[in-house]
Length: 187
Ligand code: SF4
Ligand code: SF4
Image (tube, rainbow, N blue to C red; front, side, top):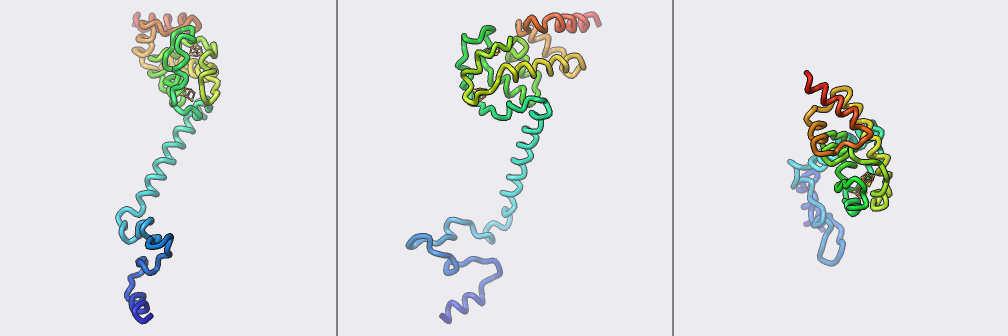
Protein backbone atom coordinates (compact mmCIF):
# COMPACT_ATOMS: atom_id res chain seq x y z
CA UNK A 1 0.00 0.00 0.00
CA UNK A 2 2.78 2.36 0.96
CA UNK A 3 4.77 1.32 -2.10
CA UNK A 4 1.79 2.08 -4.38
CA UNK A 5 1.33 5.45 -2.76
CA UNK A 6 5.04 6.31 -3.32
CA UNK A 7 4.78 5.26 -6.96
CA UNK A 8 1.67 7.40 -7.49
CA UNK A 9 3.49 10.38 -6.04
CA UNK A 10 6.50 9.92 -8.34
CA UNK A 11 4.43 9.29 -11.48
CA UNK A 12 4.87 12.04 -14.11
CA UNK A 13 1.66 13.66 -15.36
CA UNK A 14 0.11 11.67 -18.20
CA UNK A 15 2.21 8.54 -17.64
CA UNK A 16 0.43 5.20 -17.60
CA UNK A 17 2.00 2.55 -15.45
CA UNK A 18 1.34 -1.11 -15.42
CA UNK A 19 -0.46 -1.06 -12.09
CA UNK A 20 -2.90 1.56 -13.50
CA UNK A 21 -3.98 -0.68 -16.34
CA UNK A 22 -6.93 -3.05 -16.10
CA UNK A 23 -6.34 -6.73 -16.76
CA UNK A 24 -7.91 -7.72 -20.08
CA UNK A 25 -7.01 -11.36 -19.55
CA UNK A 26 -4.79 -13.11 -17.07
CA UNK A 27 -1.25 -11.75 -17.39
CA UNK A 28 -2.09 -9.16 -20.06
CA UNK A 29 -2.87 -5.54 -19.28
CA UNK A 30 -4.55 -3.08 -21.58
CA UNK A 31 -1.54 -0.86 -22.22
CA UNK A 32 0.03 -3.68 -24.17
CA UNK A 33 -2.60 -3.04 -26.84
CA UNK A 34 -2.51 0.74 -26.87
CA UNK A 35 0.65 2.78 -27.24
CA UNK A 36 1.40 4.98 -24.28
CA UNK A 37 0.83 8.61 -25.30
CA UNK A 38 4.18 9.59 -23.84
CA UNK A 39 5.99 7.07 -26.04
CA UNK A 40 4.74 8.68 -29.21
CA UNK A 41 5.14 12.33 -28.42
CA UNK A 42 6.53 13.06 -31.90
CA UNK A 43 3.82 11.23 -33.77
CA UNK A 44 0.71 11.68 -31.67
CA UNK A 45 -0.95 13.86 -34.31
CA UNK A 46 0.18 11.76 -37.24
CA UNK A 47 -3.02 9.72 -37.35
CA UNK A 48 -5.09 12.91 -37.30
CA UNK A 49 -3.05 14.34 -40.17
CA UNK A 50 -3.39 11.11 -42.12
CA UNK A 51 -7.16 11.04 -41.56
CA UNK A 52 -7.42 14.68 -42.61
CA UNK A 53 -5.46 13.90 -45.80
CA UNK A 54 -7.65 10.91 -46.61
CA UNK A 55 -10.85 12.89 -45.93
CA UNK A 56 -9.65 15.76 -48.17
CA UNK A 57 -8.80 13.45 -51.07
CA UNK A 58 -12.15 11.67 -50.72
CA UNK A 59 -14.02 14.99 -50.62
CA UNK A 60 -12.26 16.18 -53.78
CA UNK A 61 -12.93 12.86 -55.51
CA UNK A 62 -16.60 12.81 -54.58
CA UNK A 63 -17.04 16.55 -55.17
CA UNK A 64 -15.55 16.36 -58.64
CA UNK A 65 -17.85 13.52 -59.70
CA UNK A 66 -20.88 15.43 -58.41
CA UNK A 67 -19.84 18.68 -60.11
CA UNK A 68 -19.28 16.76 -63.35
CA UNK A 69 -22.85 15.44 -63.14
CA UNK A 70 -21.60 11.86 -63.03
CA UNK A 71 -22.15 10.98 -59.35
CA UNK A 72 -22.70 7.27 -60.04
CA UNK A 73 -19.00 6.92 -60.76
CA UNK A 74 -18.31 7.33 -57.04
CA UNK A 75 -19.78 3.88 -56.46
CA UNK A 76 -17.43 2.09 -58.84
CA UNK A 77 -15.26 -0.36 -56.91
CA UNK A 78 -12.69 -0.50 -59.69
CA UNK A 79 -13.11 -4.27 -59.38
CA UNK A 80 -12.95 -4.66 -63.17
CA UNK A 81 -15.68 -7.30 -63.28
CA UNK A 82 -17.06 -5.35 -66.27
CA UNK A 83 -14.05 -6.50 -68.34
CA UNK A 84 -15.99 -9.75 -68.70
CA UNK A 85 -18.12 -7.96 -71.30
CA UNK A 86 -15.46 -8.88 -73.88
CA UNK A 87 -17.10 -9.70 -77.25
CA UNK A 88 -20.54 -8.66 -75.92
CA UNK A 89 -19.39 -5.07 -76.48
CA UNK A 90 -20.39 -4.38 -80.10
CA UNK A 91 -17.54 -1.91 -80.64
CA UNK A 92 -14.81 -3.94 -78.92
CA UNK A 93 -14.16 -1.77 -75.87
CA UNK A 94 -12.11 -3.85 -73.45
CA UNK A 95 -11.64 -1.71 -70.37
CA UNK A 96 -14.97 -0.27 -69.25
CA UNK A 97 -13.67 0.45 -65.73
CA UNK A 98 -11.07 2.77 -67.24
CA UNK A 99 -13.89 4.78 -68.78
CA UNK A 100 -15.75 4.96 -65.47
CA UNK A 101 -12.66 6.18 -63.60
CA UNK A 102 -11.89 8.67 -66.38
CA UNK A 103 -15.48 9.97 -66.11
CA UNK A 104 -15.14 10.30 -62.35
CA UNK A 105 -12.15 12.62 -62.57
CA UNK A 106 -12.80 14.14 -66.02
CA UNK A 107 -9.67 12.60 -67.50
CA UNK A 108 -10.32 13.20 -71.22
CA UNK A 109 -7.08 11.60 -72.31
CA UNK A 110 -7.81 8.34 -70.50
CA UNK A 111 -11.41 8.38 -71.75
CA UNK A 112 -10.47 8.85 -75.41
CA UNK A 113 -7.52 6.42 -75.26
CA UNK A 114 -9.80 3.66 -74.02
CA UNK A 115 -12.44 4.21 -76.66
CA UNK A 116 -14.89 6.39 -74.73
CA UNK A 117 -15.93 8.24 -77.90
CA UNK A 118 -16.44 4.93 -79.68
CA UNK A 119 -19.01 3.62 -77.19
CA UNK A 120 -22.52 3.47 -78.65
CA UNK A 121 -24.17 3.35 -75.20
CA UNK A 122 -25.86 0.02 -75.84
CA UNK A 123 -25.68 -0.99 -72.18
CA UNK A 124 -24.41 -4.56 -72.78
CA UNK A 125 -21.62 -4.09 -70.26
CA UNK A 126 -24.04 -3.08 -67.50
CA UNK A 127 -25.09 -6.64 -66.72
CA UNK A 128 -21.48 -7.40 -65.72
CA UNK A 129 -21.21 -4.52 -63.25
CA UNK A 130 -21.35 -5.76 -59.67
CA UNK A 131 -22.66 -2.34 -58.61
CA UNK A 132 -25.42 -2.25 -61.24
CA UNK A 133 -24.14 1.11 -62.42
CA UNK A 134 -25.82 2.62 -65.46
CA UNK A 135 -22.64 2.47 -67.54
CA UNK A 136 -24.29 3.64 -70.76
CA UNK A 137 -25.48 6.78 -68.99
CA UNK A 138 -22.07 7.38 -67.38
CA UNK A 139 -20.29 7.04 -70.73
CA UNK A 140 -22.90 9.18 -72.50
CA UNK A 141 -22.48 12.01 -70.00
CA UNK A 142 -18.70 11.86 -70.28
CA UNK A 143 -18.94 11.86 -74.08
CA UNK A 144 -20.97 15.07 -73.96
CA UNK A 145 -18.46 16.63 -71.58
CA UNK A 146 -15.57 15.55 -73.77
CA UNK A 147 -17.14 17.12 -76.84
CA UNK A 148 -17.89 20.29 -74.91
CA UNK A 149 -14.28 20.42 -73.74
CA UNK A 150 -13.17 19.93 -77.35
CA UNK A 151 -15.26 22.90 -78.49
CA UNK A 152 -13.93 25.13 -75.75
CA UNK A 153 -10.31 24.16 -76.40
CA UNK A 154 -9.82 22.35 -73.10
CA UNK A 155 -8.50 19.19 -74.73
CA UNK A 156 -5.09 19.09 -76.40
CA UNK A 157 -5.52 18.31 -80.10
CA UNK A 158 -3.17 15.30 -79.95
CA UNK A 159 -5.64 13.42 -77.72
CA UNK A 160 -8.42 13.68 -80.29
CA UNK A 161 -6.04 13.11 -83.19
CA UNK A 162 -4.76 9.87 -81.64
CA UNK A 163 -8.31 8.67 -80.98
CA UNK A 164 -9.20 9.50 -84.60
CA UNK A 165 -6.15 7.67 -85.98
CA UNK A 166 -6.95 4.60 -83.90
CA UNK A 167 -10.58 4.52 -85.06
CA UNK A 168 -11.92 5.38 -81.62
CA UNK A 169 -14.58 7.91 -82.66
CA UNK A 170 -18.11 6.74 -83.38
CA UNK A 171 -20.46 8.13 -86.02
CA UNK A 172 -22.18 10.48 -83.54
CA UNK A 173 -19.02 12.52 -83.19
CA UNK A 174 -16.98 11.80 -86.30
CA UNK A 175 -18.19 14.83 -88.31
CA UNK A 176 -17.44 17.29 -85.55
CA UNK A 177 -14.09 15.70 -84.78
CA UNK A 178 -13.09 15.70 -88.46
CA UNK A 179 -14.03 19.35 -88.76
CA UNK A 180 -12.05 20.17 -85.63
CA UNK A 181 -8.96 18.34 -86.90
CA UNK A 182 -9.21 19.88 -90.39
CA UNK A 183 -9.36 23.32 -88.83
CA UNK A 184 -6.20 22.54 -86.90
CA UNK A 185 -4.46 21.34 -90.07
CA UNK A 186 -5.29 24.52 -91.98
CA UNK A 187 -3.88 26.81 -89.27
S1 SF4 B 1 -22.27 0.59 -73.42
FE1 SF4 B 1 -20.42 1.09 -74.60
S2 SF4 B 1 -18.74 -0.01 -73.56
FE2 SF4 B 1 -20.68 -0.91 -72.85
S3 SF4 B 1 -20.99 -2.67 -74.22
FE3 SF4 B 1 -22.11 -0.91 -75.12
S4 SF4 B 1 -20.66 0.02 -76.53
FE4 SF4 B 1 -19.47 -1.33 -75.19
S1 SF4 C 1 -17.87 -3.89 -62.62
FE1 SF4 C 1 -18.87 -1.95 -62.03
S2 SF4 C 1 -17.97 -1.49 -60.01
FE2 SF4 C 1 -16.61 -3.00 -61.00
S3 SF4 C 1 -15.07 -1.77 -62.10
FE3 SF4 C 1 -16.72 -2.19 -63.55
S4 SF4 C 1 -18.03 -0.39 -63.41
FE4 SF4 C 1 -16.77 -0.39 -61.57
